[in-house]
Length: 218
Image 1: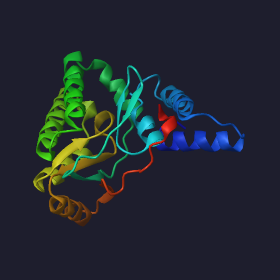
Image 2: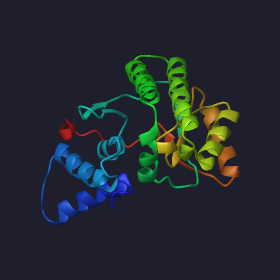
Image 3: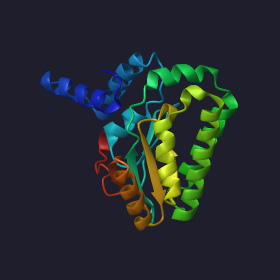
Image 4: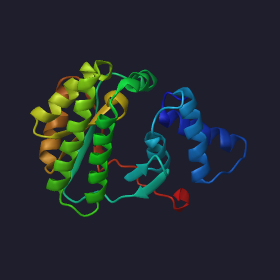
C-alpha cells in the first residue's frame, strides 16, 4: 500500500465504505496522502493522489494543497503512453536529495508559467510552455543518472520523432510519458507508432479524462 496513488485512493474509499464512514473529499485526500507519504518516507508532492481523487483536469499546489479545476484547451490533443517499465518513486526521491535547488526551482517556475497561460492561451503557446517544462526536467535527469530511465527515454524519442511534444511525469519520469500536439492526426500517428513497437496507449486526451469534478473538492 502506498506504492500506487490510484490503489491508495481506491482502497481508502473502499475501507471507509465498508466501515460505513463518510468523509468529504478534502479529508479523504488528507488520509490517502498521509498513507502514501508514509510509504515514501515523507517525500512526494501528492499531485498524483489529488489527480486520482478529484478527476478531470486540475492544477495542484503542494505548499497550500490548493486544487483548481481547469478546462482542457481547445485545439490541444494528447495521449498517455506507458513506458513499459514501472517507476520506483521512493528510490528516485532518495536520489533527489543530491539535486541542486536551482534545477528544482527551474521546473517550478516553468510549471507556474504553464498553469498561468493554460486557461487562455492557444495550443501553440501551451505547447511551447510544455517544451520548456520538459527541458527543465531533462536538465534534472542529466544532473543525476539515477533519475534516468531507458524506457522513458525511448518513449520520449518515439513522441518527438513523430512530431509531438513529450512531457514526462512523476519522479524520474514516472511510468508514462504524455504526448501533445495541436494535430489529432499527429497524436494518432504517434500512438500507432508506439503500438507497432509493442507499446501501450493508456489514454487519449481529452477524450478519456475522468469527467467528474465534485463540489466538495474545495
